[in-house]
Length: 145
Image (cartoon, rainbow, N blue to C red; front, top):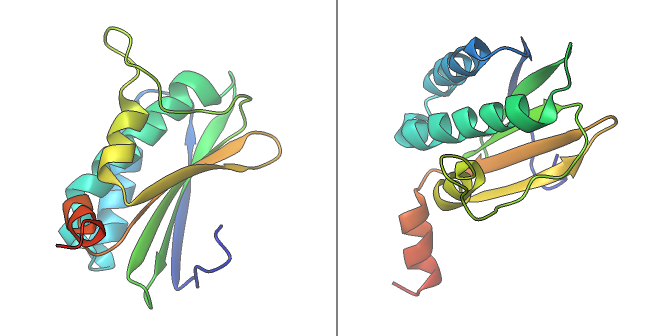
């Protein structure tokens, strides 16, 4: 976790390696985000949750294992962080789409305010963060608009 993020609220849930877990993770996140009043970015958060969970299933969760979805809300900054922890090897990155796959992290990069990959033993943490405003608002600020 980023040392500058002051934790205010935390929820986490573990999921088994099965495709229906993606919908369950999305519903878990929907409930938490709604409870915490962070609904302005709900669609963005749910899209990124789906993509990170699917990536964990497809590339990061070895047979017989699962993954953890952790949500952190720093109220002082109104920042929400979604983390997906898995025990697989490898380091994900944005790549050129190949047929019907390869768009997950492109979507996360386009929609989230920030994203990255952190260390864990074994495996990794793929995370994304959202402020109260959308990526278009952030782009306008960066452009001086």
